Length: 145
Image (tube, rainbow, N blue to C red):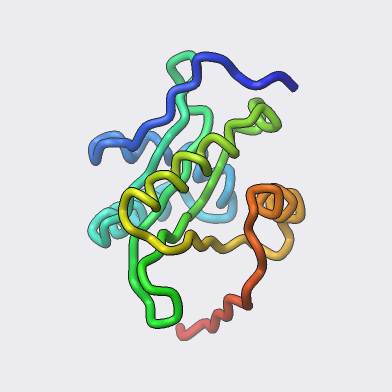
């Protein structure tokens, strides 16, 4: 498919963040809308940021991020929930979102960009490999409740 014209990518203001919830719900279909809203509110308190791609006045894609520091890598950007409207996928929106994030990471003094992807999302894995990402390790989880 042809790339979209007139695409605007920008960081969302605090009051705009709830606009991402419909796309986030597509990516997290098993989580109720109210729980997603509650989690977003909690994430905002932890300095969550989000960018959006706008096309024809509507959100076509989103990507969240945090900035942190760890012993193993120093300063890093952690990208979270890169989601593109299913009707607009394969039009270059994901790559443009990632380009924006990579430039922002450099601007903020980050050494690397990290992200998690569910093991079942083979299409996302192909996308991230094309974007220059590599698998460095495993992300382990354990329920505690």
